[in-house]
Length: 135
Image 1 (tube, one colour):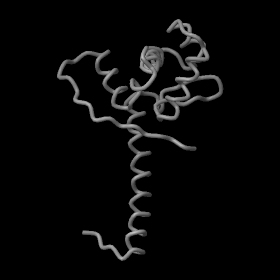
Image 2 (cartoon, one colour; image 1 turned 180 degrees about the vertical axis):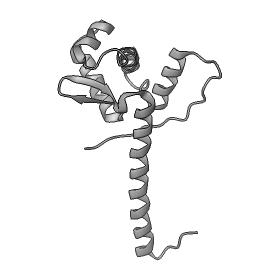
Image 3 (cartoon, rainbow, N blue to C red; image 1 turned 90 degrees about the vertical axis):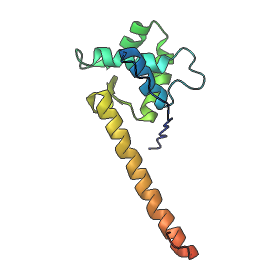
Image 4 (cartoon, one colour; image 1 turned 30 degrees about the vertical axis):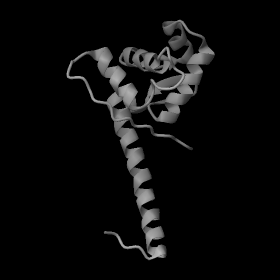
């Protein structure tokens, strides 16, 4: 499976505000950039965060109803969130990866560490073949 991990270094506000903090986390993962001018991805994450403590099986239909938007649009953004590594789909249900936002971030960190480990190994092999020494 191909996954694209986007990280944007954005200064966090000192203000403690739940909505602002969720927005910041999503912004750091690049979820508010591009054509999503209505922040549907962020609204989906907020809906999942609101529902997860109380419901085990959250569907795209439930999210579409909560956000009052078309289900195909919700599914489009859910595919992007799956690719980003924040959520996963099991049958017809949507879950935060690891069951919480913190766990999702930790899992994405592990993903990136595996990618960097592999990159480092291949880069070292290339350097050796080219006669370059690590400084």
